[in-house]
Image (cartoon, rainbow, N blue to C red):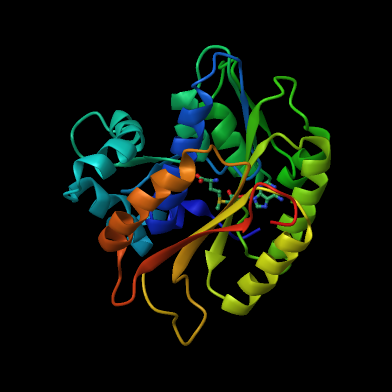
Length: 286
Ligand code: SAM
């Protein structure tokens, strides 16, 4: 396991992923009934943007760094504000040094009845995450393979939940694992919301992934991709993708407002843009 998220924390992909995450969890807060978030590939939770790893790539500067300085229309700014409030809450002296990863963002959004289960396989990272949430009765950190959570941990006892799956894509087969994981999880917990991250790097692989998802027959699969540049000749992270199964009914419209603005702010050249479409709609077969 070589992947360390500290090199990439706060980059454009994190920004888009974490804004979507925030919008989904905020929607779940609309009902009093408790929910659980299961974060299968959680990372360390809080990243030091002035640390050695983030300093080596500087990726956060064209991600969260740019967004913090961006002038946005009021309607877009309102939708992004809860996410930026969390980032700012982690940086109380007016500068940006700490970037919250997915489990910490979720923790900011839990009410007292809600719970977070975070899994992280890298032993050092799992320990760092466990230290971050030490003594927090609403959070359980498990140093195990996150893919297992798509079986054994479902359905959560709250019967309402979001499952975030954000693998590192450092080994082959992650797209197939996502599809197999979704099929297994959906059988156990069809009413859950699922958010799966993927890199926009290899268009052929994505085409195959999309077709496999369609063939599962699982309804209500929304897909979004934000590209920061035209496809590169060599494999490169040109964009960030997310599949959301059973999204809040508000999410499609929210993303339609936010993504054009984000693609401008995060653009790394010509032909930045986004797509938002349904791999399957409400009805099986749609
Ligand atoms: N979700 C995090 C966030 O948004 O802040 C970032 C996660 S990072 C992309 C992927 C993480 O998955 C890494 O911390 C890596 O150590 C961990 N990982 C890799 N394989 C795993 C597995 N099978 N189960 C759980 N975690 C794994």
